[in-house]
Length: 586
Image 1 (cartoon, rainbow, N blue to C red):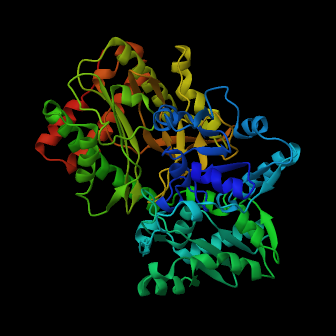
Image 2 (cartoon, helix red, strand yellow):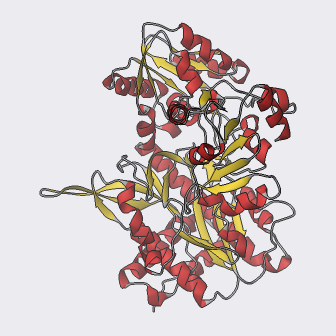
Image 3 (cartoon, rainbow, N blue to C red):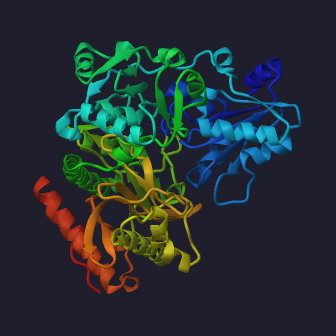
């Protein structure tokens, strides 16, 4: 912080905003771009730091409130809440910190067109000057990690279900509808999906640091050429895509003419957009987002198989926890063992995010991740929340289960059952075509609300296919989102409740939007197919709080889990699963 402020003074910068992202507006980023982490010590996936010459703040969402308080302690950085509170926004805070004529600076590569334009407007309204070319880190971050150099590989069509040539054609056809004959893709998952390539540049996300320019005349992948071997280069050439160095994208755009380029203003950096001076520009949501969100039948068949493999691995994991509970295993041991069991599959390619194994009070930290020195040792009492996911060549998984390690209290059983009721209400929903996720969100919260409880995170996020575990444009949350739920989309169903210092409860399945029925008078209706396959903890269910329909739903789900997973298990594992999925009666 002292080094940063010294450079700020030398450059007459009065305040700087440091986001927790990269030039591609990624959620999970490579170590090279973890600049906010380096300055503040906060390591959550969402958070923005604002530094003045005399003060500093960190804004994050409810998933990270407790984590941020712990990591920022003694740093001189104050945490502010993005949601669930009445804290000032970063610009409101800056308005109270800065005087007219002072300079607010950012690195324009790390801010989208939309973000930069909003900051420019804020500065204009408050008499401030705005600079988008301030990058102090080359001078002060001397041991900064290099850009990743993992090799690129092809995601075969038997998993992807569609060729890259076909996808490029569909993307350009959608761009044409918007008045553009070319597009520049900045989002790493969009590039990976469109070209059917994968890489290990970003932890948990099989993507490559790159840009992609697509047009009928010429398509270019901007990437470190050393990452592309002869086989991949030949594949890309067959797809009509040439390879150019990653750092040439700006000069390429500066000299490009005779094209109208579609840029997604929420995913394209301000710096990149400013490079397009000789071409027309259409600002619109990238067509890839919606095309990617709607899975084809090959992908859907793959994710069903991936869920079976994942469910079988989790049976082994939860059995292992029960069998070793008295041996002093820790939260970290649980995470290690999950990788071991999943790794028995040839299609496994790693975790889709860092496991959250939160015992008792750690379960109340929404995005807790156990570390050496602070990980809890499990005991035959209390509750354990495990939120975990995997990357397989044929699908991405994400599941949360909360289990009792001893005899649960009545309060724990009540809270668990209220969360379960909301989870069922959303998972069992039938809704008309063109419904938005925000219109369904209250289904999952209603039972908690009736008991004056809630949670501050969203109820559901989109999930990629062997890509990001969090993807849009669809979601299920209280915030308005114009994207409607379409057949083939995957979203999570994960209500929860968190009691600081005591315990956290979350239950999560991935669900697939499918057609349900078509009526002459009221049109088409949709529903959810539950993809995730693993039992709930019946010890935590208060049957007196379940309706007959909810009880039948749980029993039917457990029957499906038993039938789908049993063929993949040995005799002891089947016996364990049979016990966990036995019919519940009042």
